[in-house]
Image (cartoon, rainbow, N blue to C red; front, top):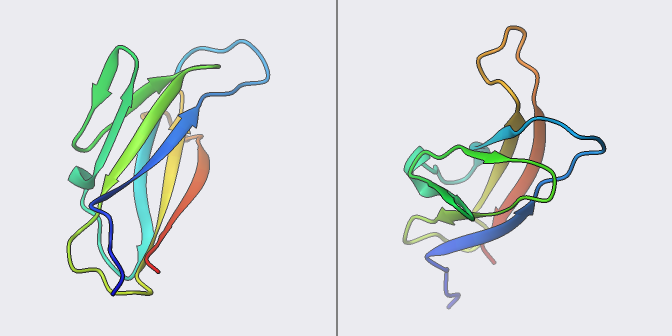
Amino acid sequence: ANSVPASVTFDITGWSNAATSAWTLYPVQTVGTFQLSSTAFSLSAPGQTAGPGPTISMNNGTTATLTITLPSGLASGSYAAVELLSSQDFQATPLTYNEWPLAIYIE
């Protein structure tokens, strides 16, 4: 029998090719065989913690950790796709953001 971890962790480092103001990260699930609620996501960085339902401020060289708490009882072959969205203004019209894909697969 496979052992499913209680959570998965992703290390994140902010990067930009020029000086810029800080931006916000926001994780969302896009597809999967199981559902992750907004409370499944927790972001932390030196001097700041967000979660459940997190957003966090980043800039070039900033490090952060995204922890995703998994539901219990996941079967082998279960998966979820998560997008880590980054934007300097999630309220702007039109909204401009970047998407960074993450995947969780249960062996």
